[in-house]
Length: 312
Image (cartoon, rainbow, N blue to C red; front, side):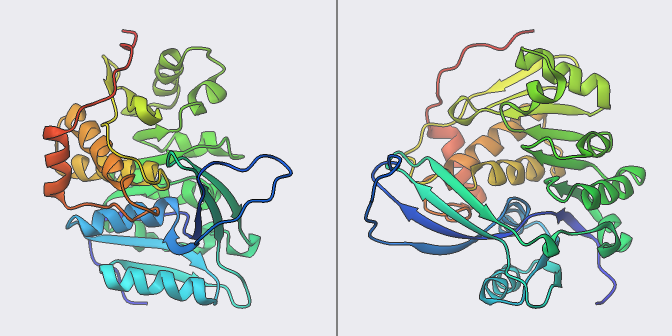
């Protein structure tokens, strides 16, 4: 592979091929339910965020592993179509990651995942030049050892590192020590710290690990972020929801877009919420990635959910 050029964002982490099955309601245990259609679409936390940033005009690189099947060819075509510098390692005779996603009538999704352990990205798979020739790094932490190495390289050279974490993977605390912008799922902070209050957990995470910002995404309640001096509670935008698949991925992409444009934190969070909301109006992890103008119009015109104020 050629020596990489400088890009705005490099993402190291998950890809998946999603089979989406829409149903009027989630099946009861032991039931038999008919469905009318199934859509096969590219997804995955980091891969989808990278595609979104590339769509919005940033230059990007993706680092991950795929098998040598039709799913891998789908991902490669999508990276090429979007213009992403894809540093994808191929594992022969392996099935690429697959997700079966049931979407109920309210747009909420339930995900079943299948991943071949041979496709786990390892530290030895990485090249330092892929990581440090970028203005920002995104990791999702699933391949924790590789993510920790990549984040360490970026952090040591002053490249901001953004993390999208939803599980307490073994070794995740070593990874968090290299993270600048730690944006996690709703219950991650309390599980990690043992604090009962989300606000106190976010405070504890920032003080313990030295992050610049700690935040938790909260579904329709939006996002709560702690910057060391104040909390920022930004409610989600009200939109007709077709499918929540990929909402968190596109939120992280929106946050990174604002970060690289030097916006104030509140505007970064608002843009991220709007980008995620717009994505939820269409089917698939990437189906509603809208243009910048569309996201800004939604910010200016859409109502927001009412939420209780955060603690000081």
